[in-house]
Image (tube, rainbow, N blue to C red; front, top):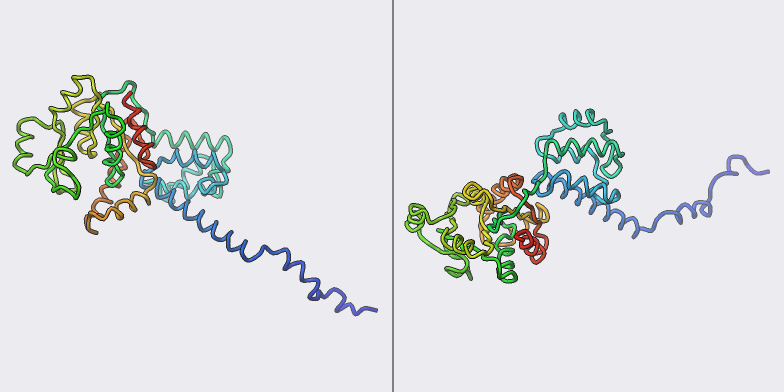
Amino acid sequence: MADPRTAHTPGPASREPDRASRPPEVDRAAASRRAVAARRERASLKRDVTMRVITPQELLRRALAEPESPAGAMRITEFLTSIPAIGEGKRDRILAQLGISPVKRLGGLGARQRVALERFLDQRWPELKPRRGRSRLVVLAGPTAVGKGTVAAHIKEHHPEILLSVSATTRAPRPGEVDGEHYFFVDDAEFDRLIADGELLEHATVHNRFRYGTPRGPIESALAEGRTVLLEIDLQGARQVRAAEPSATLVFLLPPSWDELVHRLVGRGTEGEEERDRRLKTAKVELAAQHEFDFAVVNDDVARAADEVASLTS
């Protein structure tokens, strides 16, 4: 008769199926890498919302379109606190108001919850609503290092029907820049004269150091001939053009992500650490002003972005 103390004791052979049912070590490592990558992407998306590279509505759209994506897997609590001006206390009040459980993920919201969240976001953070009609005077602006110059140069090369305005500046030429082609390089005295004589459509001091301005004469001549004119300028200049020419079409150039903007600025290598820090702070402020523009274009590919900007002139 079998000893009852040993009759059900598993031996090595009976434990073997348990080991066989476990995923191989290589699969567990791959799953771990995927989890880490997903966490990083969620963190990047939250930074993009915080820095206003994308709107909360855009992140929600991505989550609902692909519930299994990193955006879809983001918890509603993470999503709300990534929005500027929403802390944990305000977040909890919003969730109670909308009737959404704090454990919910964006991709798993019910139909009623989606509608309530969308309505809440649209009321507090309205997205760009392009005005009717488009002007032949187009302004391209955006945060520092977003690639405005590169996109404008591509438009100049591939869309000759569009005149790219040449700005005047008090800064020194960078390597490869040609006076009269990339900028009109002038000293402070000449810049003062241009302002005094009313020869600049707009002008501004950028990064608290150098002055930039747009000569008025070439623009007025081109518009009189029926041509489209593109101004590649900074945020201050764009606001001045809107004030002087309310019909102008304003286009805001966005980076694909905040992390990519930082990478582009650091990788450019033309500024020191102090200057980079100053420009990053400026970029945060500039990104927050995109709601003042008529259109937003993402510079994820220069040719594609340039073609999209060019299409907005017709």
